[in-house]
Length: 273
Ligand code: DGL
Image (cartoon, rainbow, N blue to C red):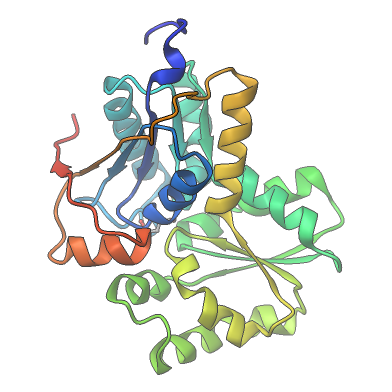
């Protein structure tokens, strides 16, 4: 690990996810921090993380972190909610550079927004089982009732682009009926893929629901940390973005455009050690 020098702020920010879903987080980072150089790693060969054991997700996350450290990044953002739920404290022990997951910013956002103190969390099985979001929320406010629901099929629906059709609608109705009965007024989209299904989720939950996009909240937090740590890149030029994956899914280009809102061409396949 290189020590912080007067040029540290010029180094890139490293972002990793289990695959391409984390591009929703990258999209928010690109918008909020347009002058930052960003390196994105999607562990597409080992996707999904959401159904794997905690031990496996921690191990994979350490390998992703080590790859990004080898690229001399100044900060690491864990875009994957599942990895954020179980691995961040382990990653923070490995390096002295800031490592931030999507969990704390997402939880803070929900606590700020709820008016009736009833918050819903949707995520992968791994994220929901870890109870990490509810623990984080209760650290801030013990009086908030938290209700969680795994929505595993949402990941595939988002990747296939089935986000606004009948199947998405029926799937959302089935998954979300319990949360509706609990009268939550705020819901954390606790998975990288779920912001793509925002419209359908809102339709099912009703127009008064406040949806918290953990990725957006995280990008705001990343900017704050960079300013506080004097790590913000002050260059006038637009930041450079590099993308790495551990395998190419068949329709990678198409899927990535759906998540990022633009085409990416400079993607390299890498092998993690
Ligand atoms: N990126 C994962 C997450 O946010 C979803 C996909 C997966 O299960 O790996 O939890």
